[in-house]
View 1 (cartoon, rainbow over the protein chains, first blue to last red):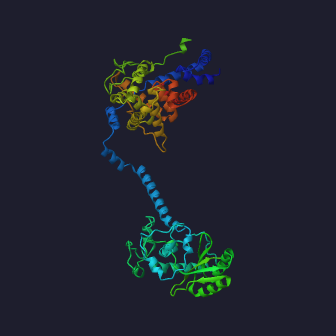
View 2 (view 1 turned 90 degrees about the horizontal axis):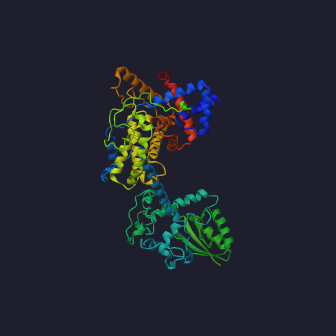
View 3 (view 1 turned 180 degrees about the horizontal axis):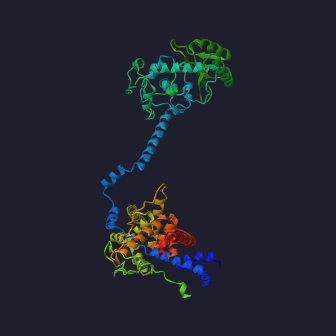
Amino acid sequence: MTCQDARELLSAALDDALDAGERERLDIHLTSCADCRREQERFERTIGLLRGAAAVRAPAGFVDRVLAAVRPQPWWRRLARWLFTPWTVKLPLQGVAVVLVAIMAVYLYRVPSRAGLTRVPTDRLESPPIARESVPAEVGEGPPVPRPEPGTTDRGEFPRTGVEAMARDPRSGQPGPPPTAAPEQQSAQLRREAEKREARVRTSSAPPSEPAPSPPAPALALPPPSRPSPPLPPPEAPAAAPPAARDHAAVSGPPIAVKGFLGGIAPARARAQITALVAGLGGEIAAESFDGAGIDVLLPRARYDELARELGRLGRWNASDLPGDVDPVLIQIRLVE
Amino acid sequence: MAAMRREVEPARMSASRPGDRAGSRAARPRRDGPRFVAAGTVAGNFFGAARSNRDGDDAGLVARLQASDPRAFEELVIAYQHRVFAVAARMLGNRAEAEEIAQEVFLRVHRAIRLFRGDAKLSTWMYSIASRLCLNRLARAERRLTREEDETLARVPDGVGGADEALAQRQLQAALFQAIAALPEDRRIVVVLRDLEGLPYDEIAQVLDLEPGTVRSRLHRARLELRERLEKFIP
């Protein structure tokens, strides 16, 4: 055993922590190595000094303080402690809470606009063209009217739901293609104008199924403050209607001014032709029905006649009369045999 | 060769008070114990008797603690207060922090006693909590070991052997305090547990969750370092 090895064992030897083999080898080495014996002695003295260190004792009253600390405190004490939690703990927790609330608020606010993504109920498109005079009647309905769901037996009630339904689908991410026409800016502007007019006409007849968080959002979206909707708006409500409390800012649009049927042309071809036609006239496809048999077109009033002519050339075009004061006009084209 | 197996005697073998001897700790009813501490008291721990008595008591104590016997916790604190506090004081270098840590140790024991499975000794468990809390506290960044002044951590008895002796003793204690405090934490803890608390190697290995070989080598290095610092006290 070398001196180096031996010295590694000295400390343990003094603690009686060597195994028999190590012990024996060390002993043998130490008999013949005075240097290592000296090392061992020095080690011994060091340990002796250490073990002579004054014993540290707990201070007086320590036990009482510990027992007091362990005792559960009355509820009011604990409440006070919770309220005054150290800032390092409380701030992050509160920060996280605020962030979560904000995320929830944003998510819930966005849900109504997603509601506009529901497809146009097919029953709506099957109803006959409606004269404009029915619009006030539609608009005059109050909250108790439920929003029509696709597939419900709402067919006879299209007029009533006109405003809501229409407001739902235009430019709301329908399966239909977004306007791809070249004059995109024009269509966007059309849309903005339409929205402004729509906002003026629309009443505060918010449907009851509106998700609760949306009321605060409309209050922000509409410049004039919105008033809470009366359950049954008076008949003159449409005329003097305040801006809608319910806001489908993302899905607002003009009411359907003209409804027409286009027959005698294959639907696919009709759609392609109409799309091109509308784009060329500076309008846009506002919506398409789920089954592809209905197309809503938004067009400047001035171009309507031309559209009607062209549609007549494509197939059999039968439509209601163009109302007097609407611009741009929203034309509902229903493709039939 | 009998010469090799020497028992290590403490440097000063002063007369200890009667009642300080091994075995009497468990029986002592007073909470704080005698204020006068002789250097030789520490020796009592090394010769095993006190600890084996403690072990026997501890088994019963654990059972009573887990049964929520109200007096059991108080007994636990009384029995372990000095050990826990001493480890903390030696590791952290000041009494104020040591009391904080020591109290935390007992709080944790109080909370977790039901999870204690008894596969280790209660004392091992207590030491391991204490060591861990101390090492965690020391590991916090930028922490500097606060050095207390010469009064060190314990009162040095001055009635023994005259003024010169007392002075020498105080100097020695101060030197010991500084030397131990200057060790890196992982070496410091093994020295504290072995040379100040008297735990055997295997228990230290359990307390610190180390291999026995690691305990041995760390202790060796620690003592080498201390030997250097305490050179002038070693003739």
